[in-house]
Length: 157
Image (cartoon, rainbow, N blue to C red; front, side, top):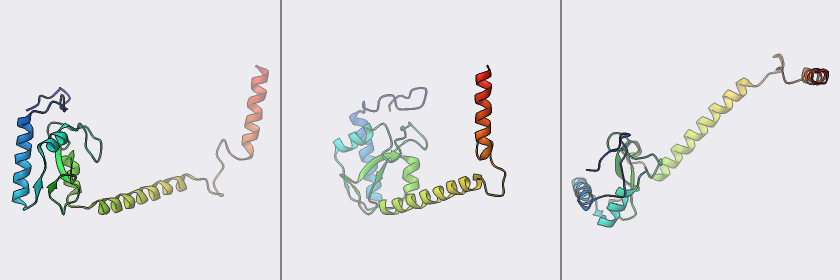
């Protein structure tokens, strides 16, 4: 096992031993067999996936254990662990993504973005001054008078 720094982050993700790669390959192969999925990842690909320091989806730094530990995700859940269909991501994101397709994730993202924009618009709309509310300190006809008062104060100094 790789040693951890005090922060819990992987010390040097590029220094991955062949034994670690072989263990990961065996684990993925067994998982694929159990779920009757195709497995066709090369040793080189698995080593490369293990060398990425951050999550493919979130760019979050991998940690040795927990929600931000490294996991392998099949981009297209209808396919197995095959070349070009596997990325390194956090355990957290992998479990949240589950069996969603990219199209479903994109739709979810757009819907959440729309809701967030609507909430933001509501907040700004509620902060806007309505015609029956008093005007703010720096708006309206008094703004010109305040500016003139400041100018006369500065010239008298």
